[in-house]
Image (cartoon, rainbow over all chains, first blue to last red; front, side, top):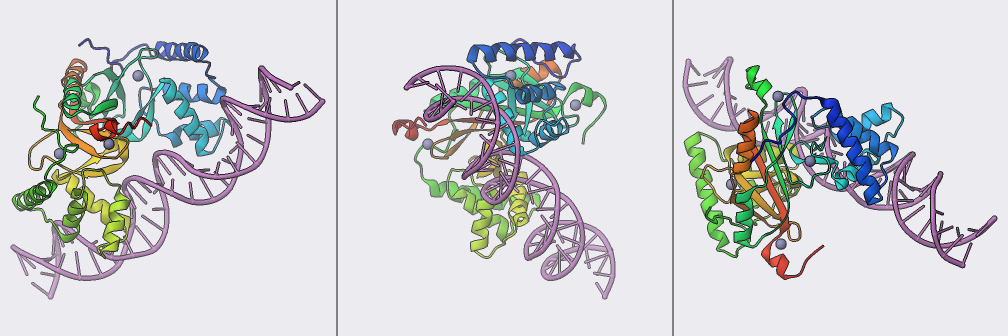
Length: 161
Length: 161
DNA sequence: ATTGTGTATGTTATAACATCACAAGGTCAA
DNA sequence: TTGACCTTGTGATGTTATAACATACACAAT
Ligand SMILES: [Zn+2]
Ligand SMILES: [Zn+2]
Ligand SMILES: [Zn+2]
Ligand SMILES: [Zn+2]
């Protein structure tokens, strides 16, 4: 299993942003979906960091920029981005994060640092779960795999609580 | 990986209930924790079926029985039961379910039928995720593994939407 | 030009989930 | 009896999410 995990390592983040936006533009064109100003702006906001953001935090940003102030504005944009695969919902946090593997078809898994809030996205198909599903006749459609713990930096800082 | 998944198969459910309650009693005694009437009743309510229940649904039951009517009553009891390992929280559903492997130390995974709401609990340690964590230096403390799909019965009924 | 259709947005209200803060009771040991 | 600790009661509040309905715009068919 190669480590294509991204999120904790220091890296050229602007290239993440550029790549994600380019992929979104292209894929919307292909899918005849519209990356409208609000939708694009929400994606940009989420791309600012590898952390998850609540819908209301996103909304506050939109509001500050005059792009909308009511919950449905944020939820609709987030819903669109999730449907397109540009953004993932983190169930554990009731929050959203920009995808770090834009374009690639994937079944994401997440590692969430409980200390600093950074979230890394990994590819981690769960063979044991697939086996359990097969054994019990369950038709597996979608999986949520989210781990919580401490990222390398926060471990180094000695954070334990 | 043996199939110790439980939830979809028809089975002697009363033995689930009895076993879970006995284990809870015993383990509380060992841990010097108190299985008070409200806590015990919440566990019994959750044990009625292999489906997840929202905190407010549990609360409605407690209220009907005169055991409490305010949200903290339900959340406190559920929190206690989760801490003791008798109940699991299903993040995907913002809901709670009684553990089907009482007493055993485990890292549960869930299969959630989107049609009928039944939830099966399996053991499904995610080796790929552990590998990804090790590769990136992430200290993995807790994992959420939840699959959504169709249970055997609902597949048979031809449910697709 | 008008009408229809589809998509996106604006807005109000409310549903659904969760916690805070403080008061009150019960148990038990010092 | 007092104090420490745990549990419960309750009002208020905070947070997350969606329902429902109205408006606006682009584009195609008439
Ligand atoms: Zn992704
Ligand atoms: Zn961290
Ligand atoms: Zn369990
Ligand atoms: Zn089912």
